[in-house]
Image 1 (cartoon, rainbow, N blue to C red):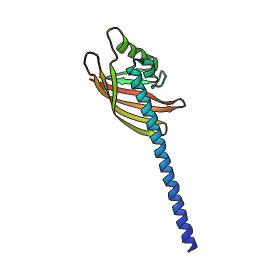
Image 2 (image 1 turned 135 degrees about the vertical axis):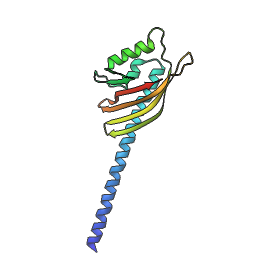
Image 3 (image 1 turned 30 degrees about the vertical axis):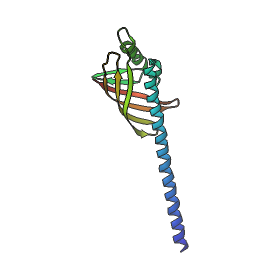
Length: 154
């Protein structure tokens, strides 16, 4: 009887530890998703106040940052900022109002995530460019940053 009782206590303890580990993992994933969502929300707010440097703060500031758009690949944080300035703040261009929608954040591990969503721009002339994107986020000591952006718009 004592052996059965000890076995029962052991099973209960193992189940409790396993349940706590699963709960802790879910809590960590939820915290990471919230932090990633904040990066994206902060980018949207920066864009809408026409702050491209603030928008770019969500990206990994590295020459290894990659962007895929159409059939083109480009690399580097500074090159991306320069491209955004030329295309959205250059003569005859406007930034419009940005909205991200239908975000889906999938954790790939404790330090990486895959994000899918839509972007919608509303321009002053009434045009509404929109498209889809996929982002790869990586966790750095300074927080979550986009290391790869693949966007396709119409």
